[in-house]
Length: 244
Image 1 (spheres, rainbow, N blue to C red):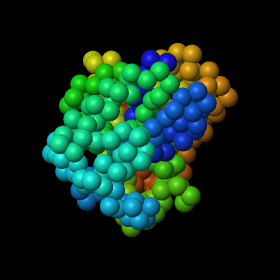
Image 2: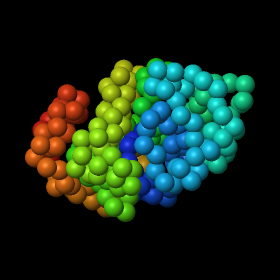
Image 3: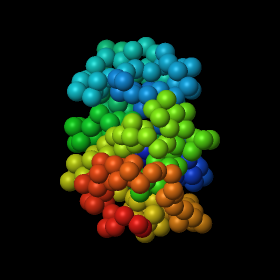
């Protein structure tokens, strides 16, 4: 498989996606989770390990020096040691170039898109994993998954929670649209077995994956309308219709 860099957001089937890839590849799973936007909600798990996290503004992005805690956190997930004399961006670019040299190792990112990292640095050969935003949101916010992240924001059926999640979903799609010219590809959860041709022989690792599951119920009529208003402009550039 030529593709080594994958990007997605929670609720998109990434847990199963990674488990399938691990049949053949070593996968660095979400090492960028330690990069957090200022004022972004943080889960209890992250709070327990908060010293490993570094908050960044959207404007400065990764053009800052890494903290020792971030260096430790990233190394714990990848084995890659940041150079303390280089910015986060410089270290990440070195890490990505290293990943590309491995035959049996890949990485799944989930936070860098929020900083426009891939488009700003014209990184090619990235594969974006996307799912219908409503289905992925309602999967992400299930009780046994990340409900505790949106609970302080008013729960699942709240505008604050919706805005929080859609900021992440929009960043993934925006990055894909901005990097298509550099060779980026997209795999839609709903059409996985059609889109996954880009994975070459690795597509066989996903035989039997049922991607027909849909989550439609959970929002009031008013908040569903609000949800659509925040996402429709980008949604229509990836999907042909809402009820897929």
